Image 1 (cartoon, one colour):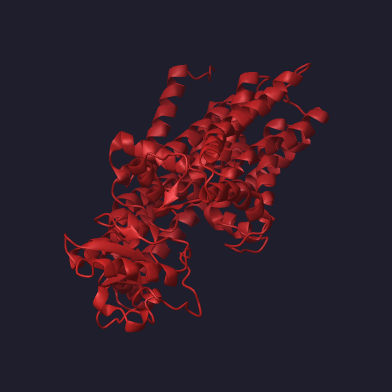
Image 2 (image 1 turned 90 degrees about the horizontal axis):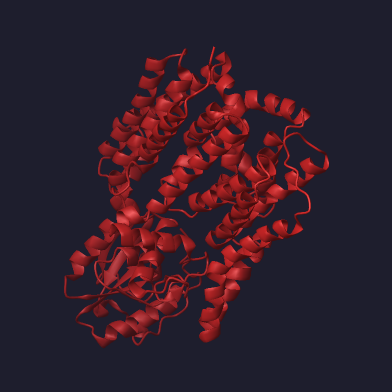
Length: 573
């Protein structure tokens, strides 16, 4: 019997898979604005790039934003120039990066094993909660995951499928692009560790190369060339304009935000075992297959199969790398996901048809559906006081629309469980998760937008002060400046709030009749009289006010604002 698949059928399967992924990940684009914590600051920096023409050094207000290289913000800015819509542009890089990552994993699994393994690797990755959740957000991590996966793709095509020096150079160049997107892009080069191990011990499938020292060195040159695309122009800019701000930025981005942040983390403190919990929740349902893939991995490693060793060992090294420092966030290990899915790929077709996996898939559908629907019904009935109080605080009134969303999500999952039943539970799980993300994108995005993005808050602020007034911001967050309905004055971001308030008072006193100051409630005392100020609203777990010059206490006039005992944390989210 001829089991060969015609190339046109393979291409059709790939295009259908990518179309399916586009719908799942892209649902909701254009229906919401940037949400905290990170999305508004990246979108704000991108917006300022477009407005100022400075694409080399990102800014947050008038201050330089030194936490991340500018590559991701520049991609958002390019997306805006192409679409002329920030609602689309700020999410477009993540969408394209996710689709690119899926394509790379599919093609690499196809080359290492067969077309079926490629399709299962792609679908498995698309089903992972963390992958889709991050792909539907405007974080840097999906983009750096793409560049790291592209680097792994090139390296593995050389190390295993090869030798293929062009792919090797591409992999090293992609690792450099990962570095200028987020410093951890260099982790792609950890693939050399299992490769050298496998080559020295003559594992099966490792490509052999001889008399190629200059070609190996070419990879290092490609890596540096990619980094130089940003670092050389930056160095020239600092040399031509050796201002203290640029000097501080160069030192901050090259040292403080890389080695110093890793060795002495100052935020997001977590224990060494933190990522175990992240994998248990965020990597569902992929890790459910490990009951079958772990024994299969053991057999493959015993058979000295480099196709399994290299991606799997690399993923373990990445997770170990991020487990060492005290500072950890769930998305840090996202770049390891594609290689884990790749290592699972050849074993998935058999595993998903086993009785035990179908039972687990059905259990996930029923349990998750019951929890979501039950929570929605319980809150809708009015008996869940905490949930209803939270909905009231977030501006949802009685919360009926929010609880309706939860009920719909749960009902869809339960419907998939009932329709596909045990015999086709694996397919039911894929359908259930796809529907969940579709509903989240088209229903939750517009529902949660005003309370999450601060667009509604800033619209209300503009309505209070009127179209002809000027607006100043104190102790502001990025979303406040991003969604201000006019050009707003700001007095620093990382600067202590009492110093910002002092500058704002002096700015306001120059035109007391037309200038208003938008301020965080915690930054008002002891200088601003709330009785004379105007309450704007609650957003992003904060209370916001507006005041005119007559609300300033006599002791604080001229900007004489005393330092508080506890400074307002402008960076906290």
